[in-house]
Image 1 (spheres, rainbow, N blue to C red):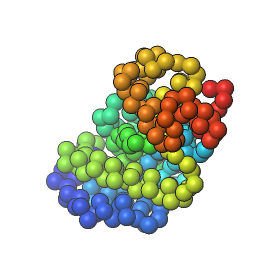
Image 2 (image 1 turned 120 degrees about the vertical axis):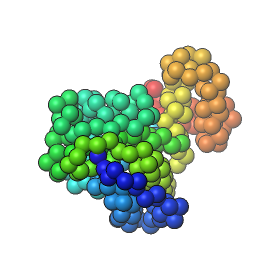
Image 3 (image 1 turned 30 degrees about the horizontal axis):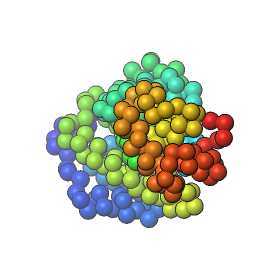
Image 4 (image 1 turned 45 degrees about the vertical axis):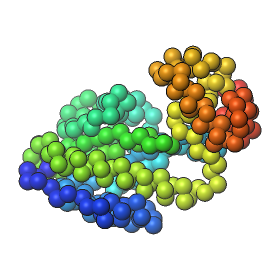
Amino acid sequence: MLRNEIAPRISTPDLLQIVQAPDWNQLRTCVQRLLAQLGICDFMLQTEIAGSNGNGASQMELFGSLPNAVLQQFSLPAEDQTDPVRQHLARSRLPLNWQVEQLCLLHSGQIYPLLKTMGVTQGMSLAIHSKHAVSRLDFYSNAMRQETLSTSVQADALLLGVYLQEAAELLWRKAAPDQGPMLSVRELECLRWSADGKTSSEIGLILGISQRTVYFHMKNVAMKLGVYSTRHAISRAVMMGIIKPDT
């Protein structure tokens, strides 16, 4: 997919430039410059931030070097439901290398045909999980030779992706300073099920985690909301609009 020779390693100053980018344009420019060193032509970051809009619902953020019309395709529910890349990332945190021709056959949506018209031939997709968000990150190549990313390039791309998501979250928070306490995706799930009357044991079975982990998440919820018990956390979350009374 990319050059056969060993790609230049991304340096610590390069990574610092990413997280210190003062705005979206400079972040995009910095990331594109580093990706060009790896033979990657474009990227797309789709981030779901839990409870970010004050009513408990997750908010979707899209950022990348693709045209806006193409980026917006990633926000369409119909595209997500049948996207084989998204299905893989939901099951595994391992990166997925793919050929655009194959995905055009497997996926009935418009995303991959649009990428193909832009000259994209293949890509690598990965899932990145942080405390407050879950992201899908795509790297695209227009190389004619169909070769998988080298190990060194994949390692650099993964490292760059972690810093890119952190930088995107920082810029998003700067644009929404009054968003209130941010609950992680798992904390919000535990809170909602608890408000629905489920016990910690039942929540653990539903989410596939241990009862102790449920306790841990609910303790964090109480701390973030400034209360001392699960019952108070639920009432405070309802009052703040993080969850609805009938959930």
